[in-house]
Image (tube, helix red, strand yellow):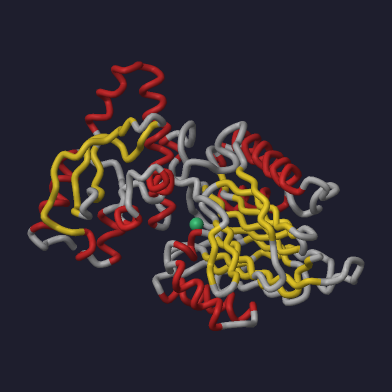
Length: 404
Ligand code: CA
């Protein structure tokens, strides 16, 4: 049978966020990463509730997939309920990736865009599909990975715990092997460094603590635009009945702002980070636009704007029926088209189920997003809803190379 021989758990605020809204639980044989989203510390609350739901472990571990999904749904219900109690927490949500190591299999439950990987025979296998719009489009063959990198809806996730009363949880079981190393991580890692680099970093550092710290350092070196959470575990084969090497005992730690890598080669860790103002993602039926904080780091802002825009769209569509569609024509945003050119779009950056785009391209600039500095790219392509005049003026100054 298999057991966890070594583990690492670390979370870092990154270089651009003021707060860490990721939470994690590392308590062999159960490991959880949650990436919270929501204004005014709500993201931190949501991710913490998610990991707390797993704190007691599985009820009896006879059906790990079902039990993981049940705990995830319980967390969803709690977060959803709480989001109605406090206006500041309206629309809060969190991703969830949970892994349970059984005797032969690893069971995984998953919602959102935090990922699970297995490193086996020097190869990194991705065990989860992101619940994000671009991932869905790629799976449908409608978007290439290259296009996805600059897609205007890149940060929209399509499933999370909290925003809706019910959530669909993906589960799977993966036949594990001794020597496997599993990685759970928030998108602050995977949006900053590619899978090749992740694999190379893990292979270059046989000790999990070294590997985890190197992964976090690499994401920071690439810009550290988001909170970075990394959980690693290595499996070994033991004869049934052998004592577990991983100590029990569970700590819950408020992660301080910088480099809050929570270590445990040999123990359990549960962390969450104290939060400053930050924000959420998602899809339908979410934060009313008025509840959206104006400030916040870029990706959160983008996400919350999506949420606001989507809520706006639904309200409009709901109230006005198809006539509501016309209301979308008064808002604009700047994104990139499929060729990576900075483009003025009319409407809101969202696609309804059934591939109904709520935006259309109005003007394609001659400027490729890849030529912009990261700062400009983030300022310009944050998908803020703008007036036509503002958006057009921004693009014009960009074309004239006068953009501040
Ligand atoms: Ca994140």
